[in-house]
Image (cartoon, rainbow, N blue to C red; front, side, top):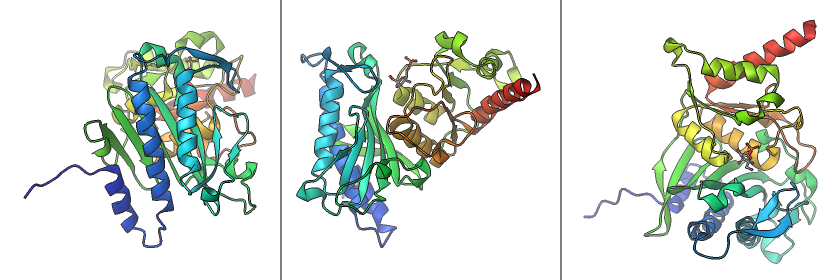
Length: 342
Ligand code: P6P
């Protein structure tokens, strides 16, 4: 009798669905469709150095960032998989100015919409540093034949599911549907995502801080006070903490999720809303970290409670271990109080 300990993503999704007798399986199928596209993107990411897919298309996306060929490839793969899935009515992608409505026969009656960053961290593509896909799934709120902007401008507290794929030393899919966070590692020999990290909980206290300190002159005093705090000698608290910043949100987030820590992309003097996009970076990561026992705020407000007003709006992001996010907020609050007294 062969005892197979490995559980594939599809088996896990089906088993999880058993716990919800009224589940229709549509969300399960949508997650499968996303994982399928991820495998195709993974194949291209892994051979990027071999095939002439590196370099740029010479185009610039809505963010004003140079679009690399793999960005375009990833966007097209996820769009293609979602378009024919039959469970997704439309997509808001980092690579498109406006949302995309699927008006094909497959999408009639589809219940969900997806916000996606097809390939985050793309500036690292050419230098073989981990990059990732980030996705967020909402139920439609519109009942019209086509999806509307309101379907996408929902606060993160309405998320049905969110997750990311990290294309790194191994390729992993990590997602939550609102109860737990589970991680699946791709086994290339069988082409399956296999359960490798069940019910991920992020440590309450962390010893890693991730922030691009080259912007120090543009940080608010509260942020610089927090960074100073992280660097101080305090054996009892295990300080100084370790500074780790890869420049790829998915990679920094994944390490901090597992080991504990905080990732900060704050408001800058020249970018008051920071750099990260609310719909397809901050919200999905915030949903995940809260389900894993951590916190995510913009320095003043819970990320998931922010009411979006634009598809590509940005938000400052403080995300990670409870203890560290609370401490960072304390320094920001102290700064606000000081400024109020001036
Ligand atoms: P900076 C990648 O472009 C990204 O959106 C995140 O993945 C990453 O954490 C951040 O920007 C890096 O930005 O300004 O530090 O280069």
